[in-house]
Image 1 (spheres, rainbow, N blue to C red):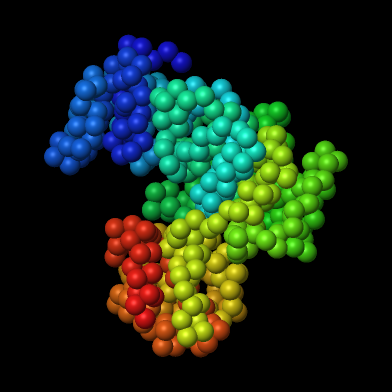
Image 2 (image 1 turned 45 degrees about the horizontal axis):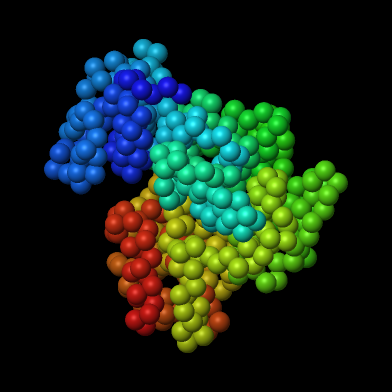
Length: 446
């Protein structure tokens, strides 16, 4: 893709936009960057990019910039229905996401992983497996560094593993992973999408440009994922923790079995450090992605055995007076809370935060069966009480610290206190990491 002297507009100057602007300027493109934040808010960004030949349009967006560009690169935070993007698309301007731009320069096998939940763990683990098997590997995308950072660095790698969000998939045209994985789909980001189906369609775009030479790693146990599997052009490679598969990877009786073209490998799970049913799925998906691209089974399973849970995903905090405390702040949607509840019994669940618009109905059966006490916090507490409050002993707390104190009073020995919010954190905290640290501090202060 020739970039020199091309008139290119970068929309949005968060982390991705900054990387894209630097990448394009280094290739002698005529770069304009635009953001609704002004020079004061973006002073650090301007300093970072200050030595580059970039035209700045800050505090506003100018329609003329959108219509006169030869290429527009959109940051993930900018929705597809932005009026100026709609006008530019109608005028025939080429509009791409950062992953689309980067993919045009990636020449080695690419693994792309998406799903409502589990993306980060699966992506990180897949990257570690490739490295453990001797492949120089770049891990990025929606975690770590944007993919263009790899191209910018000039680093020679043999594998690329990318976590991909639905937002990043909105402006792809030729983005084609050799292995694409869809882990699961549950309601999320309904504050961004007009409907649940629109969100589902965005996720499915990860398979859009694959051919029969590629692999689609899909969750056989997820009804929505499996419903769309027959429409995919790539070779299906399912994973399941409920069904035995003749082709694919599945879990049964403390063994993970990988079957492909008549070959079979088995991996005992007893020594895994990752716990929880959701992590069994993440491990199977990561093994599938890596074994299909040449990894040694022995080296792969050694990496899995030594891999520990990432922070803020069902992380054990401490045991106090016979009660175990787990922090699951990354569980910002209902689907991730379902997996957490499936992993424990006799639960005191602390939930709530900024409501994201989805239904809490998928939690009904698990709350009835496993949650002894429910403590609600944040803006979503009223709606959660309406949908779930009658199912178990339900309380309200004004702060997370109060919720932890209350949980300690009402949870019986051998019980589990689980903070798994099903909501984003922005009503009470800077982000999910601050929410996690506040929970951990409150538990340690008991």
